[in-house]
Image (cartoon, rainbow, N blue to C red; front, side, top):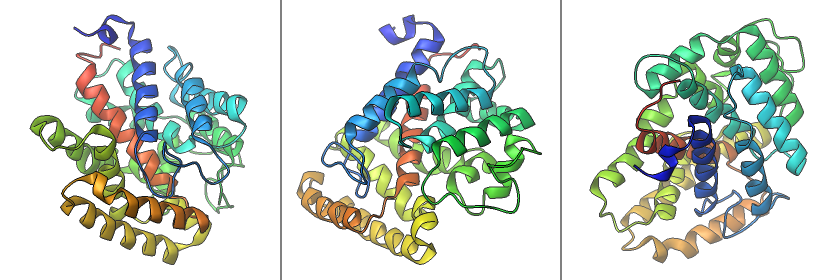
Length: 294
């Protein structure tokens, strides 16, 4: 048994969360901050500091889901004073809560139970967290505006936003994109173990797959549907070329050039990066945690 499994469950979860965040930063993800290039007024060190800050609080015992989200965003703001990881927190906090809550079933089944059990208090804490993070493109909405008092459960609020936000969609459909699209890419590589692709390049492939499958919500909010659809199409083209390259390294220059163009245009596919972290985290939960007893 590895050393991580000898730690208390909360510490295991905190460490796996931080590892997933760092693994995502080590991959070339065009348009986002990564080890090859900073961007959008943020540095890789901002994201590392954020991961460290959040990992110290996100897996605490005896928190409601909403509290788990809020204390994580508060920790980020104290650490870097900017929004580096709201989407990551919104996706990973329910996963951690599902592991810590005594429930039956596999991880996705437990997650769905957690989401079904959310309360108005969870919604209010999450509204407060989103308002505090103040993500780019956050506008006013007619129903369940985060600047107003919550009058619904967290799941109901996310269901109402699911048609315009990929993270909200995950709450509404039980994280289907993560478990049915993203995770199989990582799991297949784990099984084959002979793809010739290291973990960072595999993460790049995962990211391009997610970005090519959906119009990135962060781009939609800042630049509109047409720009998001164009970036989605470009991602699909790059994914095809990446997959047929004899070696990912041979395609690196093309991805770096695209990365530079996206950043010059101030286009940040942040939601796709958030989903990438969540996929990496789910794989780590499945691989590293032998059991979760709550």
